[in-house]
Length: 347
Ligand SMILES: *[C@@H]1O[C@H](CO)[C@@H](O)[C@H](O)[C@H]1NC(C)=O
Ligand SMILES: *[C@@H]1O[C@H](CO)[C@@H](O)[C@H](O)[C@H]1NC(C)=O
Image (cartoon, rainbow, N blue to C red; front, side, top):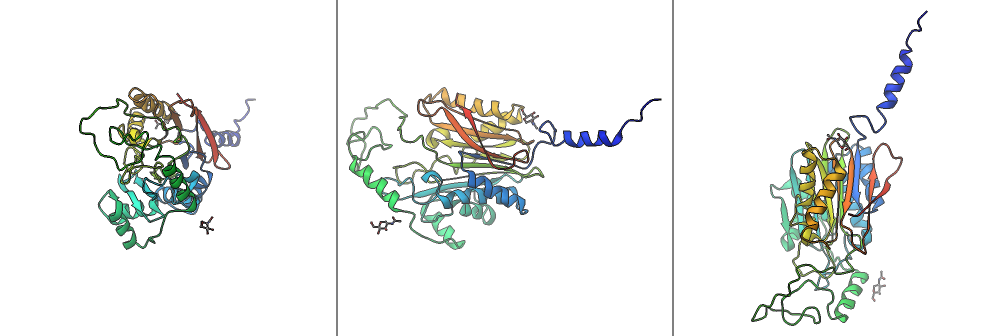
C-alpha cells in the first residue's frame, strides 16, 4: 500500500525554506550603514519596528549618529574648518519618488539630516547651503547654536600651532605645505603636479551613509557628516550630492559612499553602483567596480562604498591603502538577531 504524502510536513518545509536567505523575496527589511555605527542601525530598526517608513528610518539612524557625534566626524564638535567652525553636510533620498533633500555647509544647526528632511518635505528644491540653509532651518523650528566644543577648539589650536598643517591649498603663496595663510595665487603659476595628497590622518571613520529597504520594498538612503578636518571654509563634500554620497531607487537598489569626498563626488559612486546593479551585477561586484573606476585616476584615494539590491542582498568594497585595508560596516535584517558588524577586505 502506497503511503499518503504528508502534506503537513511538506507545508512546513516550504515555510522553513522561505525564511532562509535563498528565498527569492529576500530578507527584508534591511538596514545597511557605513562604519561600525551600531546605534545608528538600532535607531533605524526601531523606527521601522514602530511603523516608520524607510525615510523615517534613515533620518532617525543618521540623527542618532549626529547626537552621539559618531567618531567625531558626524554632528557637532568635530572637523573644525580653517576658521575653527564645524559645519555639516547631509542628504536624504526617497527611492520611491526620487525626491531628495540636502544641506551643505550648514552652520550652527546640530540636526543636519533633520533639516535635509525638511528640504525634501517642504520645498521643491534639492540642496540648500551655508548661512541661508541655517535661516531655512530656523524657520523650520531648529535651534541656532554653536557647534564648537572644547575638543574641536583644541584640534583647531593645535593645527594653528602646527603651521596650519595639513591643509588643502596648492599652487599658492606663501607655500601652503610650510606656512599658514592668507594665501594668494602666485604671479607665475608653477603647478606642483600633485592633484591629490594622502593627508595621513583622514583614514579615521567619517560620514555615516545609510541604506534602508522597507519590507514593502521602499528604499531610502541618506548621509550625515561634518566633513574633513581643516577644510577651507565653504567646502562641501560628496555627502549631500545625490548619486555621490548616497542614492536610492526602488527599481534597482541603493548605495552610500564614504571617504575623500572631493575625489568621490567626481565619480558619482553611489549612482554608478545602483546602475551596475540595475544592469544585473550583484551588490559586491557593483561596489568593487565603482572602486576600481576611481582607482584608475586616484590609486591612493581613501574611500569605500556599500550597496544593496532590491531583494535585500548587500555588499561593500574599499580602496586598499597601507593604513586602510579593511572596511567595517553594519547590517541589520531579519536573519540577524541584532545589528551585526561585517567587514570586507579592500581591493
Ligand atoms: C571646556 O573648557 C572650559 C574652559 O577651559 C571649561 O571651563 C569647561 O569645563 C570645559 N568643558 C568641558 C565639557 O570639558
Ligand atoms: C540581488 O543580489 C543577489 C546576490 O547576487 C541575487 O541573487 C539577486 O538575484 C539580486 N536581486 C536582483 C533583483 O537582481
